[in-house]
Image (cartoon, rainbow, N blue to C red):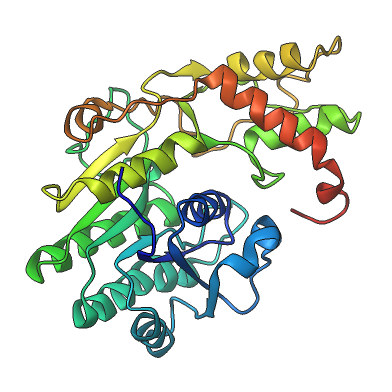
Length: 320
């Protein structure tokens, strides 16, 4: 692994689920960690470590703010996880484009001026759209919502600009990622919190397939990508490589919590734009970066449930 001791690291989207886990890892690695967040960001996920990071308030949509942040931090590594639309409740199309596409361009333009050892970018399986076959990185992109299309556009433009300007860039296209401190609207927290709070669990038929991988494994992949000096302009799928029907994961949660009740399958209709079979081919990242998911689905779920049990009060009437 890269020795991040005293390395200047900047993380966008550090207040989010994945960004907060990466920020914690950087603090633990003794990096000189800085984060770029909007002034209105809720930093509850990193509240206990905020004194260990330099906080820079900047909106990715504001080119001047982004450039000032980069000039002030002059990072060795940048982890770009800031995005709009990860939360499916975020529907503003203009904000998705201005944040995901223009925000990425603003960041790259600033880094071209100052230089950095490597830019690590988070992509999304939503860039691929609804495929029936196993998905390789060179698959045609057919996104069907504004989040997927804006992330696809950002990835294409970012890699083109990075290649033209000799800026090392790696994009990890994440499939299903889960773990501690995820938002209550997401799949695993929604079920876990409902059961812990004694509420009914209303679900679709849960016959759609998903690949779920513990968040710590994704952070491992980011660090390996940063380490790989010969790897300069690549896209990697990141997931477990195994898909199961959503019902499989539901039953795992119920079994772990020893719940005798049953979820209400079919209480919620499937979405019109439902993704049915997002199956990542992860052979490239395993071959090139020598990455393997160290934390199994079972162990990751146990850690996640334990965290929600200990931190249940954080989700009482907060909208998180």
